[in-house]
Length: 339
Image (cartoon, rainbow, N blue to C red; front, side, top):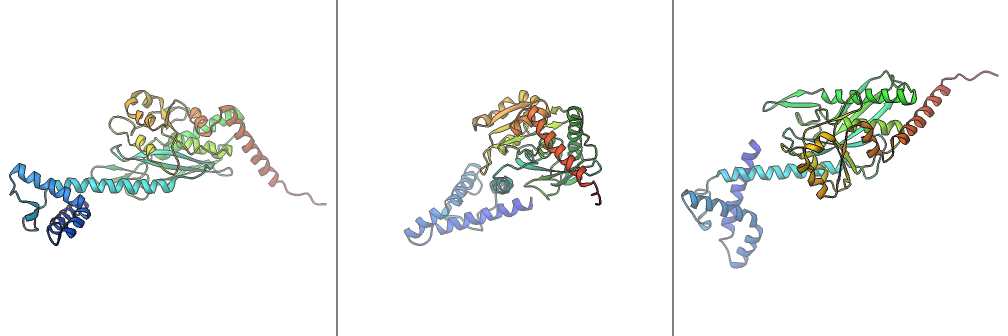
């Protein structure tokens, strides 16, 4: 609120200066001033028109001075709009700095929103695997907090639970399909966000489940993730992808975030089946930007879209990568025989 008040007073001061500069000096000076203060003069005209309509001490722009030109509700509205635009610009620039210019293994893109679901951001999820650990699942990076009330930030563990759930499914899948035991593998995820470090503006909720699942499978299979694919979705221990927020009529910030990238053009948006059916009007903005919206019901489907290969090939890649490492580890533990 304090920022809005300061900005509103700044706008008023600029309008007073614009009125003064465009009515002094010779014609050349006034023409230069009109060009220089064009936006300020537009706002000034807007306030004076409000004065005329409401009968609030009508004055002309030539008569405008610090004494008779008072701050108006209009200034606060414009100040709020300006600050909103500035924040959007800062977020966009920060977001662009996160985008990778080439694909990397163990890295996937998700999307998040503010608490209202209106402003979206691209999130980076990275995964590292320690095959000689104790079975821990850890999430680091962006602040894991939610906002309760006007300014109370509290810890939100749902993002950690989300990572734990998808890893439980991955362990089960590898045990069933490849007879590989990963119960002692440690999985560490780092979430990188343009809002990292801001209290109450960190990443919370379960919607990064699909992204965590892809990052982990990418790391395990030594396969890179297509950087033009972003995803959202809740992942469970049975391998399903469930619905999320920020993609409906109450707020479609996640869709907007995918349309605003510049360094890497998003080509595909993976969306839970339920959200796809319920938010047709909202996700149409992606189709209008030539971004394919793909409904997904399972983590396996998400893997296939993100890695660009079928599940059989993904499974083979994991088998090759893990068994090679297991054999290497076994050989490294064999003590050399003396001669």
